[in-house]
Image (cartoon, rainbow, N blue to C red; front, side, top):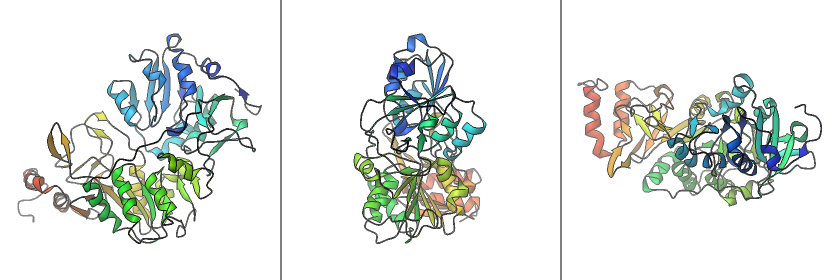
Length: 441
């Protein structure tokens, strides 16, 4: 469809009627995923076959999945799983797309055929004719530049978020539909465990005045933010993929002010945000927040431009050589690569930068305690970060830096931060498999 003419208001039902069997659709991501359109499209399920949809981090049930439990009408693919996406993947209804999140705009420009329809949720059009993308910039403009039809589903309850290219102009849009008026979905914050707090204490001691933070999702990285509120550290900056409540708490306390940043000084930079309504209220029409395309936040060549970039991310399992498996449990996919590897690399290249991969030392499975540190990754587990990229690794039992260490030194270091109940077995396995020579101490 030729653009440049005024976008036309239509109903969600009329918008869904544009979809034909065999079409590829793009639903955007996180707070930007459509709901009114999704329900209208689900109502047409019986008329359609082989409609494929890309999305990311679904924060509400997708009507097209709920109405199609046997996958007879819709194929859904995800760039990163939420808990809901994981549940549907377990049922065979959602499939993961391997990616480094910061590369996705380039995938759309170079490798992905133009989707027939892009439909995303936005703020209502402003006085300049722009539909603000709220806290979900990511790769939306790259998709819009390729899609044959662009539809925006407007919702006045979304926070209006400042940033670079965080909008679509009306001249880039074909159709406008009214959303359901529901408030943005909140992401509950899990209460930190004793292990979370112990890990956070070790990491917080490494964060210097003027450092620039990247914080991953989860209770453990957020626990770091909580400790920083009381640590005395000052003048922190933020350059992150995901904006979290922990970061906003530091911002409201004046600890994050961006005054020491050498790029985007004074700005809290992110590509999307998920959290509480309090967080959404804080970022609404706040010029201190800059929501940017993900290739402006996540590419290592961009990240490294921030001095003292400090990246803090979770993992679920590591082997004795330093590989981190952060996105799967065997062949079962649970989340995604996201920006973890890109921030590990960008932090290392940053002047004075540091990267922390953190985890609790154990987990419970079927009533049995298991070590997250193992001789080898679980068969089928995806190595999110290779051993050659690993810097600091932290559990509640200690912190080690693997840079420059040999295989025996790495194995010894990893065993030292494992739960004490598993250290002897890990050392024996390491010796039996040649990671620790018999004479090595």
